[in-house]
Length: 427
Image 1 (cartoon, rainbow, N blue to C red):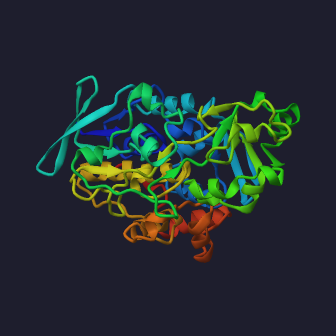
Image 2 (image 1 turned 60 degrees about the vertical axis):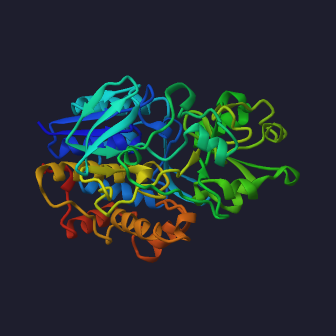
C-alpha cells in the first residue's frame, strides 16, 4: 500500500492531503505539531480578493475545489471591497478548522496532531521515515513538506521584535522544523526590501468586543471598517516596510486603521503600539487577540524556502514535494492551497510512475509557480513577496491578461489547456 506523509497541517498540508486522496493514494497521513489544523489560517480569513478570485476558480475548474468550497460555506462576508481589493470573501475563523478537519476525515486522511517531526531518515537520496518528538517513527513512500517558513522563536527574536506569542504557539508545541532541511536540502531565506532577513506576518487581530459599539456594528454589517488615524499618531511607513503582505503596503493602510471582520477584528498592520492605538476614537479599550504581543511585533516568516522545480518536487531529494511558503515567497491562503494541491497531486503521480504535472503559464497558478521560481534565483527577487492579490505579481497578472473574473472564461482557459478536472482524476 503506497503512503503519502505530509508534514505540516496548514492550508498547504490539508490541500495536499485532499489532492493525494483524490488522485488515488490509499493512505495519506498529516503530521501537525500543534493541536489544530490550518496554522496561520486559524487567524487569517481573506479569500478571493483581486487575482485570488481567478486562482480559486482555476483550481475549481481543474477539480481542486473541495477546500475552497468548504471555505465558501463558512464565510461571514462575500463579494466585499476594502482599499485596493475587490470581490473579497472573509471566512469565519471560529468555524473553519472543524469544517476542514471534517473534510479530511471524510476523505479517510489520518490526522496526527501534537505530532512534531524532529528528524528524518534519508538513504540513497530518498526519505525513508520521519521521527516525532515522541520517538515514534512514521514511514512513507513519498513525503510533502508543508512546514511553512514562520518562526521558530529564535528567528522571531533574532530577526524580529521577539516572540509575539502568536497562533503558531512555538513555546507550547515546539518550533517549526523543516523536513527539507532535515533531509539535507540547503534552503534559503527571504529578505525585506532593505536587505534584512525575513518579513513579519501582515496583520493582527483585536477582540471585537473591546472596540466601540459603532465599529463593532459596522464590522458585523459590512465586514470592513476604515477609521482615519490622527496625523500625529501615524506610524505607517516603518510598519508597511516590515510586513510580508506587500499587497497592503498602500497609502490608505498608513493613514487609516483598516479592520476586517473574520470573527475577530483583523487589523491590517503587522503590529501597532497599544498606547497609540488606544488614542484613536473607538479603540480606547482595544485588546489584542493575536498575536498577544501585537503591541510591538509579529511572527517572522520566509526563513526556510526550498529549492524546487515547477512540479513542486524538492531538488536534491527523490521523493519529496513541497507546498505553501516552502515553495517560495508566496503570500496567502489561496497561494498555499493551490501549491499544496499540486504537490499532493504530483506526489500521487510520482507513486504511480507517471509524468509529473507542470501547470502551463497560460494559467495564473502555473505562471505564479514558474515566475516565483525564476525570481527567487535573483538577489532582487529574494527581497520581494508574491501574491495573486496585489503588489508586483498582481500587476503581472493584469499585464499578461491572467486576471479574469468571468468564471465561464476561466473554465474555457482550463479546458483549452486540457486540464479540466485533472486534480479529480486517479493517477
